[in-house]
Image (tube, rainbow, N blue to C red; front, side):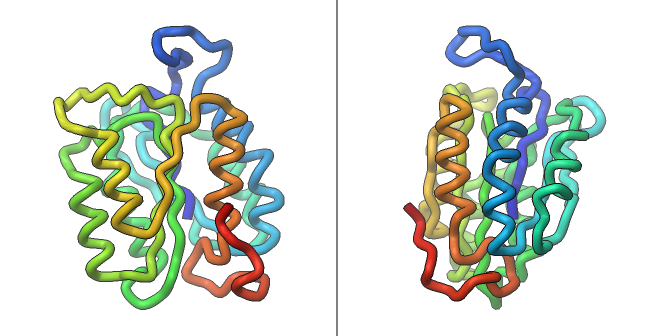
Length: 208
């Protein structure tokens, strides 16, 4: 499952105070467009988005359950997003885990975010709960152009690293579109990215 950040900050175009010519969400769209055609040939992939819809709300939406050859379906959903809301990252990951039936089946979640949880929950606490209830779940976190700034006064980078560490995942920083493509290839290029069996024999692909 891809968990995609469509919160209001994704419409921004600055990194470390330096303006970029493109909004972050457009860079993520471009990176996904490069990676998904290959990744979805071999496995079922789904999509959950968080942050789109009404301004400043904690919205989470299941756009697509894990589906074979899902590149076009995912890109259609991602291209239609209008970033506006808050960042209910924790609830989005929790919903993705439920879709994957994580208590009884292996699965992989790839979170793409540019900021911290802003809807009152703790990614680290959820990560520990997921690990206790479903040890076959892997959660990767890709922090895209994320400066580590906290609106809440907490330790957001530590929280996101904890979410990945507790669930056999990678925490990857991506400060450019090229970095993002590399991180997506490493995390989506796994033997399993859904509750369904991979579309190739297990063990032939390894996380680089």
